[in-house]
Length: 154
Image (cartoon, rainbow, N blue to C red; front, side, top):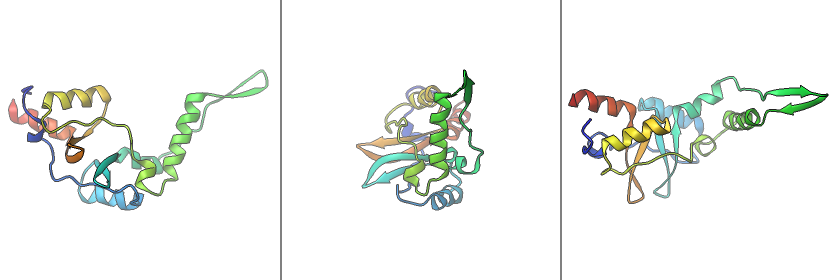
């Protein structure tokens, strides 16, 4: 991939967005209808979250019950498993996009390089990165966009 190719050449510019107060079933319908794996969540024109298909899957998955170890007659709950349980339980009971969306995720600008967005995706382990210019969502890049770019340029 040429390192100087701008993100704007590979991003999806006609971005499907969601609202934080939108219902989870409605958001799932939007993702399915548009055959997309993620959508930026926008409130008052500002990016406030990212809803990914994996955020919705928790409601259908088996939850991981916290690990409890009995030691000298006392029950000790493994802290990491308890935090995971609380997070999964909250998502499973969610009714709005705000309840399940990611609030910490990387973004890039349309003038950033394709190399930068590829590095961000790899390093952060994400499959979608919103493109933001001047505080406004102007696009989104999915892993498939990078693969198509690679196929077109090699």
